Amino acid sequence: MWTTAIDSRLTATRLQALHEQGFVLLPGVLEAQQIGELREAIDRLRPVHWDYSGLVDHYKCVFNRDPLWLLYLDPPGVIELAEAALGADCHVIGQTAWRCHPGFIGAELHLDYLVMELPPALLADPTFGLPMQICTAHLYLDDISEDLCPTLVVPGSHRAGRQPLAGETQWQGRTAEPVLCRAGDVLFFRSELWHAGSRNRTANQSRYLLQVHYGRRMVAQKFSPYLAWQFNPEVLAACTPKQRRLLGEHEATEYD
Image (cartoon, rainbow, N blue to C red):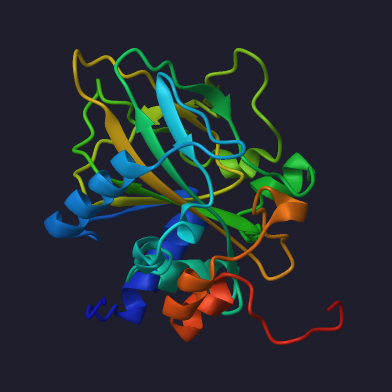
């Protein structure tokens, strides 16, 4: 269980970075023991439903497989920032484990979700604060170098108000830059940010990553296999009240 208390002023500073840059790096969230535990847990995973394996191993909804994963739905610093950005009633819409092997290619520059396109003049107005709907936390389980699949981000590109065009590599003179960090650090970014996955150029090292997606209360939870979805009773029994809320146990609203 976490014992670290997060200063509200630090969360406010990180929230401001999300508004200005579209992302923020949270150092030292995970301890060495937790990093090792997560890497071993990823090694034990086997594909189900839409999971796949190959040059990249990709496992969805891992929180439902074992209570071990629950702790990483609300790490200190991460959950406070998620609630500040998306509301105190935000929830988790996905928790995905990745293992990217040598030769992995990555992904082109993209954004994850855009509610709607907005007029460029509005987005350029420094007094306009673009609300966030979805944010993602990347929990890195390796020291990330230039060769080990660094996440690439274009600072400020969340204010572009559109997807990057084919072949586009910069926004307003800012090009994609790698996020180089240590194992245990967390990259937290909003869904409108232009970002990309990069190649694993190492000879024999796989990159381990745990990804958590947070959404506002009214953003649908995306738990595959959807109509056949069932919560694991062992997992629910192990949840804290906050984790149950993150998994969907909300107070009723006008739309429930």
